[in-house]
Amino acid sequence: MSEPLLHARKVSIRFGGLKALSEFDLEIHKGDLKGLIGPNGAGKTTAFNVLTGVYLPSEGEIFVGGQKVNGRRPHQINRLGLARTFQNIRLFKQLTVLDNVRIAVLADRTPLFDRPRVEALRRGNGPSRALGSVMDALDNYRDWWRALLRTPAYLREEEGIEQRARELLEVMGLSHRVDELAKNLPYGEQRRLEISRALGTRPRVLLLDEPAAGMNTREKADLMVLIRELRSRFELGILVIEHDMKLVMGICEHLTVLDHGETISRGEPAAVRADPKVIEAYLGEAPAHG
Amino acid sequence: MKSFAPVAIAIVVLASLQVLTSGSQYFVYLSLLVGVNVVLAVSLNVINGMTGQFSIGHAGFMAVGAFSSALMSQTLNEYRLGFLPEAVEHQLFFVISLVVGGVLAGGFGFLVGLPSLRLRGDYLAIVTLGFGEIILVVVRNTPTLGGALGLSGTPQHTSFFMVWFTVFIVVLFARRLLASPHGRNLVAIREDEVAAEAMGVDTTSYKVRSFVVSSFFAGVAGGLFSHFQSIITPGDSFSFVKSMEIVVMIVAGGLGSTTGAVVAAVVLTLLPEAMRALFITIGGDNASLAQSIDQLRKPIFGVLLVVMMLTRPQGLFGTHEIWDLLKRKKGAAS
Image 1 (cartoon, helix red, strand yellow):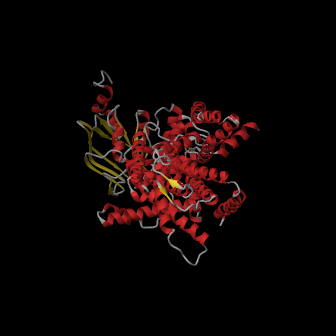
Image 2 (cartoon, each protein chain N blue to C red; image 1 turned 45 degrees about the vertical axis):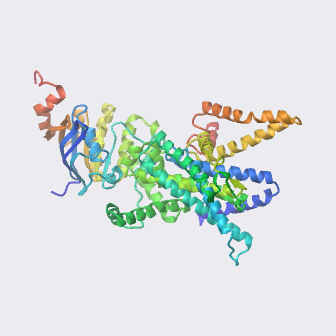
Image 3 (tube, rainbow over the protein chains, first blue to last red; image 1 turned 120 degrees about the vertical axis):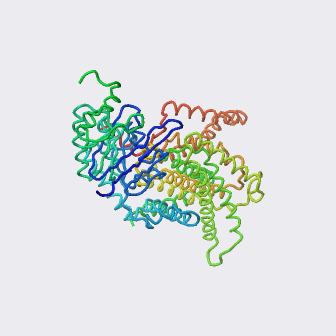
């Protein structure tokens, strides 16, 4: 099998004495649709935060697109093809729906210098690091001049960004909301806007943190269809955190169950559901009957 | 090119205004003060309004620009480039000094921007406040910069045209920046830093750069200022009070609104002058009465601000621009 797009190997994280996540293993390949479940406080969102670079893992290694990302900042990890949504919706509330997505859509601009080379230089030390930083700064400050002078290349890029943002909103069924402020959208649409925004960064792996929270049954059913559609349309690997068992069992092909930071079970949904450890974690003691 | 059309128009309009207004010295002086304040307000708005950081040391950057460009100008003034007419040469030196002041202030902006990587809100505000004070102390104790007595003898090169052309450039820059991907990323940081970072926005770099560009323009404003004041002292013109004045302008105009910053800067600079004129009329021939009424200016100014914040906490225009509001009014009427 090909190299996984996202690979976590024995990742642990400690907050003081508390082990929030221990020896967490995960592989996401192209076309995977996996689920991460567990009772409240099991460490699911912590796992997301470690994978996306918000927290630094205490132990273990994380690879995104084959590159080790321990210690990289979230925006760098995002650029390697990992995008996420948030449990408590974090939209740019005062901005329009279109702007929310436009921020995420990367400009396909031609950098002044070869990006990988600049990154490599910046990771070095001494003079090479300084040179890398200067090159990076020159590249960045060029944006000002382009914006001020509105060069043809800049205007073309802007058009491209807007077009792509509109396409994404169309796919997510938000075309009619383009000019509205994000905060004025109903809850279900805010969730979908968050997914569109994440897709704007051209991810190869998408992490969804409780995408169905607060949705009604109808919306949940639509969401299940949509998630499957996104996977094939954008050739994504998807990892979903979800409380709603029906949804998880309905769409995920593989589940990892966390409890108190420990992985207590993993495998196909049917097998996981029958696992006594999982039942215990969710219901406390083993059920009295059936 | 289409993008240069506004520049050409601005040059023509400003040049003719310069000629038309050259008769009234009082008007020109006021317009210079207003223009400098507009540049300061619009540039501070990039940090406080667009990026959502909180800087209250803008006068410090202005001071860096003012003193360094004044010094530069005094040095250059001793030289002559034979082949240019003297007036052109003066303006050329002036522009060079302004750029030097701006670049130096931008460099300090970079240094102050660095802590903003770690600090938020009030904590960052204290750092910028400290910076402003440090600059003043340094100036006070540097004989080359005139020490506590202030620096005098700077050539008076500032003109109506130069100030308002700078205003034009800074406003154009702010508008086009906000409309660009760069500006959208700044606003994303203001709205939600965690989400911005997760969407691939290099928040650190953007925050530092907004400090750099903002202090560059503050430095240029300082340069313009030092070239129409016969003496600049580290005391009053660049103190903490001045920084707060600029903050008040952008808050009153609506954080994040460029036109709001412009309007507020104009109104708040002219208001004390207008009140002075008004009170002198009320006082009439009775000089002592006029004087005592004149002392009411500051309290009235304060009360006006309090009333304004109570009735419109989001500022004059909120985060909108003036034309957004006009459009909405029209829409509501029809």
